[in-house]
Length: 117
Image 1 (cartoon, rainbow, N blue to C red):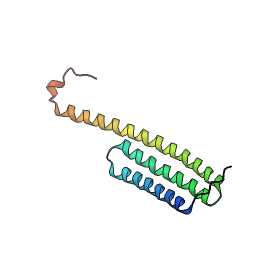
Image 2: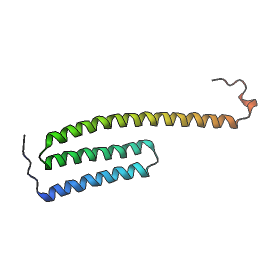
Image 3: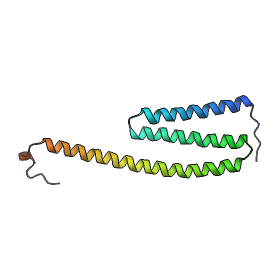
Image 4: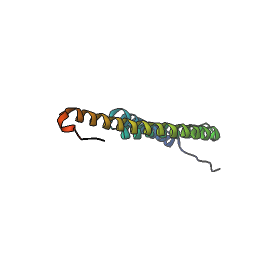
């Protein structure tokens, strides 16, 4: 394995970058109204946590523990993202069905005779 020798200022810079990416993900998650953009914000937060785990493991000279934690985090992240996408699909589908119901309820019944799905 190759030993990396980074200066303390470079390590601090990487910590700051990790925090910036996490804060950007947090802002994207809470300030965006569209579900997919919120999901991107969640993904940014989870990726910055993974990078932080790797950097912390490197600093503490316990890379194997950090790698195992990151692999576990990636598996959990994949499940969370999959569930979130499934929920988004169901929410959008339900909203479209509700919108169609509202539009149909505003149309006079005489116009709906003969309309069958």
